[in-house]
Amino acid sequence: MGRVLRADDVQAAVKGGSVFAAGGGGWVDHGLMLGTAAINAGEPELVSIDEVPDDAWIATAAAIGAPGGTTDWQMLGVDYVNAVKLLQEALDAPIYGLIIGQNGMSSTLNAWLPGAILGTKVVDAVGDVRAHPTGDMGSLGMANSPEVMIQTAVGGNRANNQYIELVVRGATAKISPVLRTAADMAGGFIASCRNPLRASYVREHAALGGISLALSLGEAIIAAEPKGGSAVIDAICSTTRGSIIFAGRVSNKSIVYTKEAFDVGTITLTSGSQSCRIHVMNEYMAVEDGDGTRMATFPDVITTLDESGRPVSAGHVREGDKLHVLRIAKDVIPLSSSVKDPSVYPIAEKALGIALAAYALKDAA
Image (cartoon, rainbow, N blue to C red; front, top):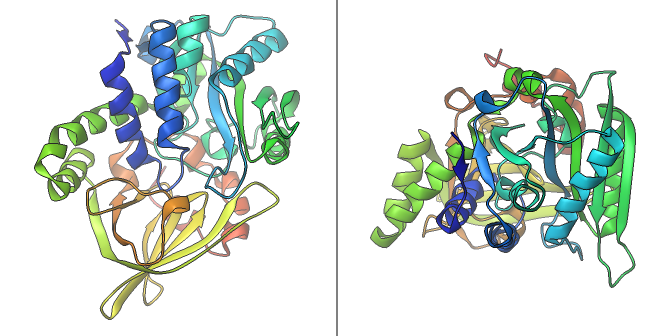
Protein backbone atom coordinates (compact mmCIF):
# COMPACT_ATOMS: atom_id res chain seq x y z
CA MET A 1 0.00 0.00 0.00
CA GLY A 2 1.03 3.59 -0.56
CA ARG A 3 2.37 5.90 2.11
CA VAL A 4 0.91 9.35 2.68
CA LEU A 5 3.79 11.81 2.99
CA ARG A 6 3.74 13.94 6.16
CA ALA A 7 5.64 16.83 7.76
CA ASP A 8 8.44 14.59 9.11
CA ASP A 9 8.92 13.23 5.60
CA VAL A 10 9.53 16.76 4.26
CA GLN A 11 12.53 17.22 6.55
CA ALA A 12 13.86 13.73 5.79
CA ALA A 13 13.44 14.15 2.04
CA VAL A 14 15.32 17.45 2.03
CA LYS A 15 18.16 16.22 4.25
CA GLY A 16 18.60 12.92 2.42
CA GLY A 17 18.03 14.49 -0.96
CA SER A 18 20.69 17.08 -0.16
CA VAL A 19 23.34 14.33 0.03
CA PHE A 20 22.20 12.82 -3.28
CA ALA A 21 22.16 16.38 -4.72
CA ALA A 22 25.88 15.85 -5.42
CA GLY A 23 26.69 19.53 -5.19
CA GLY A 24 23.57 20.65 -7.08
CA GLY A 25 19.96 19.51 -7.01
CA GLY A 26 18.25 22.80 -6.18
CA TRP A 27 17.85 24.64 -2.90
CA VAL A 28 16.99 23.52 0.64
CA ASP A 29 14.52 26.40 1.11
CA HIS A 30 12.85 25.54 -2.20
CA GLY A 31 12.52 21.90 -1.16
CA LEU A 32 11.04 22.84 2.22
CA MET A 33 8.61 25.18 0.45
CA LEU A 34 7.48 22.48 -2.00
CA GLY A 35 7.06 19.84 0.69
CA THR A 36 5.30 22.10 3.18
CA ALA A 37 2.95 23.40 0.50
CA ALA A 38 2.17 19.83 -0.54
CA ILE A 39 1.30 18.48 2.90
CA ASN A 40 -0.81 21.57 3.62
CA ALA A 41 -2.62 21.36 0.28
CA GLY A 42 -3.48 17.68 0.38
CA GLU A 43 -2.12 14.18 0.98
CA PRO A 44 0.59 13.30 -1.52
CA GLU A 45 0.96 9.53 -1.67
CA LEU A 46 4.22 7.67 -2.27
CA VAL A 47 3.62 4.38 -4.09
CA SER A 48 5.85 1.56 -5.30
CA ILE A 49 5.98 1.01 -9.06
CA ASP A 50 4.61 -2.47 -8.33
CA GLU A 51 1.32 -0.85 -7.25
CA VAL A 52 0.93 0.95 -10.59
CA PRO A 53 -0.99 -0.61 -13.52
CA ASP A 54 1.25 -1.46 -16.47
CA ASP A 55 -0.62 0.80 -18.89
CA ALA A 56 -0.76 3.86 -16.59
CA TRP A 57 0.95 7.02 -17.78
CA ILE A 58 3.96 8.07 -15.71
CA ALA A 59 5.79 11.35 -16.37
CA THR A 60 8.86 13.01 -14.91
CA ALA A 61 8.53 16.11 -12.73
CA ALA A 62 11.74 18.09 -12.82
CA ALA A 63 13.37 21.46 -12.38
CA ILE A 64 15.73 22.55 -15.13
CA GLY A 65 18.56 25.05 -14.94
CA ALA A 66 21.48 25.99 -12.75
CA PRO A 67 20.28 27.85 -9.67
CA GLY A 68 23.73 28.01 -8.14
CA GLY A 69 23.40 31.57 -6.90
CA THR A 70 24.64 33.00 -10.18
CA THR A 71 21.25 33.91 -11.67
CA ASP A 72 18.09 35.85 -10.74
CA TRP A 73 15.64 32.95 -10.87
CA GLN A 74 12.10 32.58 -9.57
CA MET A 75 10.13 29.34 -9.28
CA LEU A 76 6.79 28.95 -7.54
CA GLY A 77 5.09 25.75 -6.43
CA VAL A 78 2.20 26.38 -8.80
CA ASP A 79 4.65 26.18 -11.72
CA TYR A 80 5.16 22.45 -11.05
CA VAL A 81 1.39 21.91 -10.98
CA ASN A 82 0.80 23.85 -14.19
CA ALA A 83 3.56 21.95 -15.98
CA VAL A 84 1.70 18.69 -15.24
CA LYS A 85 -1.59 20.21 -16.41
CA LEU A 86 0.01 21.29 -19.69
CA LEU A 87 1.39 17.78 -20.24
CA GLN A 88 -1.98 16.16 -19.57
CA GLU A 89 -3.63 18.51 -22.08
CA ALA A 90 -0.99 17.78 -24.71
CA LEU A 91 -1.17 14.02 -24.09
CA ASP A 92 -4.98 14.11 -23.92
CA ALA A 93 -4.86 11.52 -21.16
CA PRO A 94 -4.56 11.58 -17.37
CA ILE A 95 -1.15 11.25 -15.75
CA TYR A 96 -1.42 8.49 -13.11
CA GLY A 97 1.80 9.31 -11.32
CA LEU A 98 5.04 11.25 -11.39
CA ILE A 99 8.61 10.19 -10.92
CA ILE A 100 11.50 12.62 -10.54
CA GLY A 101 14.52 12.92 -12.77
CA GLN A 102 16.89 12.97 -9.80
CA ASN A 103 17.16 13.38 -6.06
CA GLY A 104 18.33 16.70 -4.71
CA MET A 105 17.92 19.45 -2.13
CA SER A 106 14.56 20.30 -3.66
CA SER A 107 14.16 17.88 -6.56
CA THR A 108 13.32 14.91 -4.31
CA LEU A 109 10.06 16.77 -3.63
CA ASN A 110 9.24 17.89 -7.20
CA ALA A 111 6.28 15.50 -7.52
CA TRP A 112 4.69 16.16 -4.11
CA LEU A 113 2.70 19.33 -4.80
CA PRO A 114 1.12 18.08 -8.05
CA GLY A 115 0.34 14.90 -6.10
CA ALA A 116 -1.44 16.87 -3.39
CA ILE A 117 -3.41 19.10 -5.77
CA LEU A 118 -3.99 16.95 -8.86
CA GLY A 119 -4.00 13.53 -7.23
CA THR A 120 -1.11 12.14 -9.23
CA LYS A 121 0.82 9.51 -7.30
CA VAL A 122 4.41 10.12 -6.17
CA VAL A 123 6.00 7.03 -7.70
CA ASP A 124 9.00 5.67 -5.78
CA ALA A 125 11.34 5.67 -8.75
CA VAL A 126 13.85 8.15 -10.13
CA GLY A 127 15.60 8.83 -13.39
CA ASP A 128 18.85 8.90 -11.42
CA VAL A 129 19.48 8.38 -7.69
CA ARG A 130 21.84 11.38 -7.69
CA ALA A 131 21.53 14.78 -9.31
CA HIS A 132 22.98 15.36 -12.78
CA PRO A 133 23.36 18.27 -15.21
CA THR A 134 21.32 17.22 -18.26
CA GLY A 135 17.75 16.03 -18.66
CA ASP A 136 18.97 13.14 -20.79
CA MET A 137 20.78 11.69 -17.77
CA GLY A 138 17.40 11.17 -16.12
CA SER A 139 15.40 10.30 -19.23
CA LEU A 140 15.12 6.53 -18.57
CA GLY A 141 17.12 5.61 -21.64
CA MET A 142 15.08 7.81 -23.99
CA ALA A 143 17.98 10.15 -24.79
CA ASN A 144 18.88 8.40 -28.04
CA SER A 145 15.36 7.26 -28.95
CA PRO A 146 13.62 8.55 -32.09
CA GLU A 147 10.23 8.21 -30.36
CA VAL A 148 8.32 11.50 -30.16
CA MET A 149 8.04 12.74 -26.58
CA ILE A 150 6.18 15.66 -25.00
CA GLN A 151 7.92 18.05 -22.63
CA THR A 152 6.49 21.11 -20.88
CA ALA A 153 8.09 23.96 -18.95
CA VAL A 154 6.52 26.62 -16.73
CA GLY A 155 8.03 29.44 -14.68
CA GLY A 156 10.34 32.41 -14.71
CA ASN A 157 11.06 35.70 -13.00
CA ARG A 158 7.75 37.57 -13.14
CA ALA A 159 9.20 40.95 -12.16
CA ASN A 160 11.60 40.75 -15.11
CA ASN A 161 8.84 39.64 -17.52
CA GLN A 162 10.63 36.29 -17.93
CA TYR A 163 7.65 33.99 -17.19
CA ILE A 164 7.33 31.27 -19.85
CA GLU A 165 4.92 28.43 -20.62
CA LEU A 166 6.18 25.96 -23.19
CA VAL A 167 5.02 22.68 -24.77
CA VAL A 168 7.37 20.90 -27.16
CA ARG A 169 7.20 17.60 -29.03
CA GLY A 170 10.01 15.62 -30.60
CA ALA A 171 12.82 13.17 -29.94
CA THR A 172 14.15 13.61 -26.40
CA ALA A 173 17.68 14.54 -27.47
CA LYS A 174 16.32 17.31 -29.71
CA ILE A 175 13.79 18.86 -27.35
CA SER A 176 15.63 18.63 -24.02
CA PRO A 177 17.99 21.49 -25.03
CA VAL A 178 14.91 23.59 -25.86
CA LEU A 179 13.78 23.36 -22.24
CA ARG A 180 17.27 24.22 -21.02
CA THR A 181 17.23 27.31 -23.26
CA ALA A 182 13.84 28.20 -21.79
CA ALA A 183 15.31 27.85 -18.28
CA ASP A 184 18.05 30.32 -19.20
CA MET A 185 15.53 32.76 -20.71
CA ALA A 186 13.30 32.44 -17.64
CA GLY A 187 16.10 33.48 -15.30
CA GLY A 188 18.08 30.27 -14.85
CA PHE A 189 15.52 27.83 -13.41
CA ILE A 190 12.17 26.46 -14.66
CA ALA A 191 9.68 23.71 -13.69
CA SER A 192 9.03 20.94 -16.18
CA CYS A 193 6.95 17.83 -16.71
CA ARG A 194 8.19 15.57 -19.45
CA ASN A 195 8.42 12.25 -21.22
CA PRO A 196 5.13 10.47 -20.42
CA LEU A 197 5.78 6.72 -20.50
CA ARG A 198 3.82 3.62 -19.61
CA ALA A 199 4.44 2.24 -16.13
CA SER A 200 5.68 -1.04 -17.61
CA TYR A 201 8.54 0.87 -19.26
CA VAL A 202 9.33 2.86 -16.10
CA ARG A 203 9.51 -0.38 -14.10
CA GLU A 204 12.22 -1.69 -16.43
CA HIS A 205 14.28 1.46 -16.84
CA ALA A 206 14.07 3.70 -13.73
CA ALA A 207 16.16 3.51 -10.56
CA LEU A 208 13.48 1.96 -8.34
CA GLY A 209 13.12 2.98 -4.70
CA GLY A 210 15.13 6.16 -5.20
CA ILE A 211 12.85 8.37 -3.10
CA SER A 212 12.77 5.86 -0.24
CA LEU A 213 16.58 5.91 -0.28
CA ALA A 214 16.55 9.68 0.28
CA LEU A 215 13.90 9.42 3.01
CA SER A 216 15.80 6.67 4.87
CA LEU A 217 19.04 8.62 4.67
CA GLY A 218 17.32 11.76 5.92
CA GLU A 219 15.86 9.88 8.88
CA ALA A 220 19.34 8.58 9.78
CA ILE A 221 20.78 12.11 9.56
CA ILE A 222 18.04 13.54 11.78
CA ALA A 223 18.66 10.80 14.37
CA ALA A 224 22.42 11.50 14.38
CA GLU A 225 22.30 15.32 14.49
CA PRO A 226 22.10 15.65 18.31
CA LYS A 227 25.40 13.75 18.56
CA GLY A 228 27.36 16.23 16.43
CA GLY A 229 28.95 16.52 13.01
CA SER A 230 31.15 13.43 13.19
CA ALA A 231 28.14 11.30 14.07
CA VAL A 232 26.20 12.74 11.13
CA ILE A 233 29.03 11.99 8.70
CA ASP A 234 29.33 8.46 10.12
CA ALA A 235 25.56 7.97 9.75
CA ILE A 236 25.67 9.12 6.14
CA CYS A 237 28.54 6.76 5.33
CA SER A 238 27.01 3.75 7.09
CA THR A 239 23.50 4.28 5.69
CA THR A 240 24.68 4.76 2.10
CA ARG A 241 27.71 2.45 2.20
CA GLY A 242 29.75 5.49 1.17
CA SER A 243 33.13 6.76 2.33
CA ILE A 244 35.04 10.01 2.78
CA ILE A 245 37.71 10.02 0.07
CA PHE A 246 39.28 13.39 0.95
CA ALA A 247 39.09 16.11 3.58
CA GLY A 248 40.74 19.51 3.30
CA ARG A 249 40.28 23.23 2.76
CA VAL A 250 39.08 24.79 -0.47
CA SER A 251 42.14 26.38 -2.06
CA ASN A 252 40.57 27.34 -5.37
CA LYS A 253 37.10 27.66 -6.89
CA SER A 254 36.67 28.47 -10.55
CA ILE A 255 33.08 28.09 -11.81
CA VAL A 256 31.31 30.09 -14.54
CA TYR A 257 27.69 30.19 -15.72
CA THR A 258 27.35 29.32 -19.41
CA LYS A 259 24.72 30.33 -21.97
CA GLU A 260 23.55 26.70 -21.97
CA ALA A 261 22.40 27.26 -18.34
CA PHE A 262 25.20 25.23 -16.78
CA ASP A 263 27.58 26.12 -13.96
CA VAL A 264 30.92 24.66 -15.10
CA GLY A 265 34.36 24.62 -13.52
CA THR A 266 36.47 23.09 -10.75
CA ILE A 267 36.89 23.18 -6.99
CA THR A 268 40.27 22.27 -5.48
CA LEU A 269 40.75 21.06 -1.90
CA THR A 270 44.13 20.90 -0.20
CA SER A 271 45.35 19.15 2.94
CA GLY A 272 49.05 19.49 3.60
CA SER A 273 50.87 18.20 0.51
CA GLN A 274 47.75 16.37 -0.72
CA SER A 275 45.01 17.79 -2.93
CA CYS A 276 41.97 16.81 -4.94
CA ARG A 277 40.08 18.50 -7.74
CA ILE A 278 36.31 18.25 -8.12
CA HIS A 279 34.92 18.77 -11.63
CA VAL A 280 31.61 20.65 -11.60
CA MET A 281 28.84 20.80 -14.20
CA ASN A 282 25.96 22.00 -12.02
CA GLU A 283 26.76 18.91 -9.93
CA TYR A 284 29.97 17.17 -8.97
CA MET A 285 30.84 14.91 -11.87
CA ALA A 286 34.33 13.63 -11.08
CA VAL A 287 37.14 13.83 -8.52
CA GLU A 288 40.86 13.52 -9.19
CA ASP A 289 43.76 13.41 -6.77
CA GLY A 290 46.76 15.71 -7.02
CA ASP A 291 48.39 13.40 -9.56
CA GLY A 292 45.32 13.41 -11.79
CA THR A 293 44.24 9.89 -10.83
CA ARG A 294 40.47 9.50 -10.88
CA MET A 295 38.95 8.96 -7.42
CA ALA A 296 35.25 9.12 -8.33
CA THR A 297 33.13 9.57 -11.47
CA PHE A 298 29.41 10.02 -12.16
CA PRO A 299 27.15 8.09 -11.56
CA ASP A 300 28.98 7.68 -8.26
CA VAL A 301 27.40 10.02 -5.73
CA ILE A 302 29.92 12.80 -4.99
CA THR A 303 29.06 15.28 -2.24
CA THR A 304 30.87 17.84 -0.11
CA LEU A 305 30.00 17.91 3.60
CA ASP A 306 30.96 20.61 6.10
CA GLU A 307 32.13 19.92 9.65
CA SER A 308 28.53 19.54 10.83
CA GLY A 309 27.87 16.92 8.16
CA ARG A 310 25.67 19.29 6.17
CA PRO A 311 25.94 18.96 2.37
CA VAL A 312 27.34 22.09 0.75
CA SER A 313 26.30 22.79 -2.83
CA ALA A 314 28.85 23.93 -5.40
CA GLY A 315 27.25 27.36 -5.47
CA HIS A 316 27.82 27.82 -1.74
CA VAL A 317 31.39 26.53 -1.56
CA ARG A 318 33.86 29.28 -0.61
CA GLU A 319 37.65 29.34 -0.64
CA GLY A 320 38.91 28.51 2.83
CA ASP A 321 36.00 26.20 3.68
CA LYS A 322 36.91 22.90 5.31
CA LEU A 323 35.03 20.12 3.53
CA HIS A 324 34.77 16.35 3.45
CA VAL A 325 34.33 14.70 0.05
CA LEU A 326 31.87 11.81 0.16
CA ARG A 327 31.76 9.10 -2.49
CA ILE A 328 28.99 6.52 -2.80
CA ALA A 329 30.07 4.03 -5.44
CA LYS A 330 27.72 3.37 -8.33
CA ASP A 331 27.65 -0.34 -7.56
CA VAL A 332 25.79 0.13 -4.26
CA ILE A 333 22.91 2.23 -5.67
CA PRO A 334 20.21 1.34 -8.20
CA LEU A 335 21.16 2.57 -11.67
CA SER A 336 18.68 3.58 -14.34
CA SER A 337 18.96 2.97 -18.07
CA SER A 338 19.80 6.66 -18.40
CA VAL A 339 23.21 6.48 -16.77
CA LYS A 340 24.09 3.31 -18.70
CA ASP A 341 23.39 5.08 -22.02
CA PRO A 342 26.62 6.12 -23.80
CA SER A 343 24.79 8.90 -25.67
CA VAL A 344 24.29 11.02 -22.52
CA TYR A 345 28.00 11.56 -21.87
CA PRO A 346 29.46 13.57 -24.80
CA ILE A 347 27.77 16.86 -23.78
CA ALA A 348 29.22 16.66 -20.28
CA GLU A 349 32.63 15.48 -21.49
CA LYS A 350 32.81 18.43 -23.88
CA ALA A 351 31.81 20.96 -21.23
CA LEU A 352 34.21 19.59 -18.62
CA GLY A 353 37.06 18.61 -20.92
CA ILE A 354 37.52 15.25 -19.22
CA ALA A 355 36.56 11.63 -19.88
CA LEU A 356 33.46 10.37 -18.10
CA ALA A 357 31.97 7.49 -20.09
CA ALA A 358 35.07 5.31 -19.86
CA TYR A 359 34.74 5.36 -16.07
CA ALA A 360 30.97 5.62 -15.77
CA LEU A 361 30.10 2.71 -18.05
CA LYS A 362 32.75 0.32 -16.73
CA ASP A 363 30.97 -2.60 -15.05
CA ALA A 364 27.68 -0.64 -15.15
CA ALA A 365 25.83 -2.97 -17.53
